[in-house]
Length: 140
Figure 1: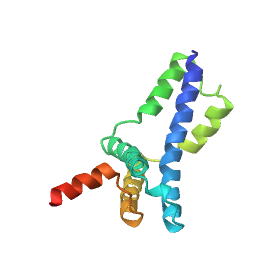
Figure 2: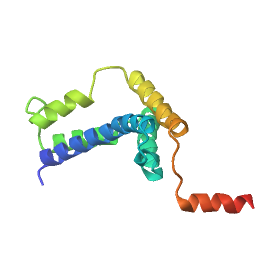
Figure 3: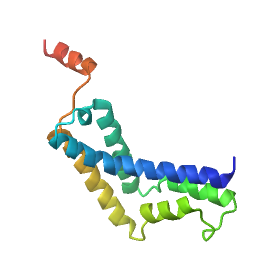
């Protein structure tokens, strides 16, 4: 496959990851308010929390985003020039990347991770049966 195509796939994946994190929290809050049961699914919520926790932790340690690095390396390997962008690359970069200090992004990620964690209290999760059975055995 061509490197520029793979870079586009990584960019779209990066966008979908960010969309899942941001959109997921919005859907959890809306779903909690209007009583959608699917927003209480244990695995959805755990994966959602893990997604933002990963971003917050690597940001706190000053580690660059692996998807950004991978995309950049693929573009370089393909001999891409920044001014020779595809439509998808141009618009997704406009949506995903802003010129602000890293500390601001880190603060946003940490606050967002706290909000996702807090959503477990405000929109409780339905525990899977194997966790419920384990907890009731320990109480006896």
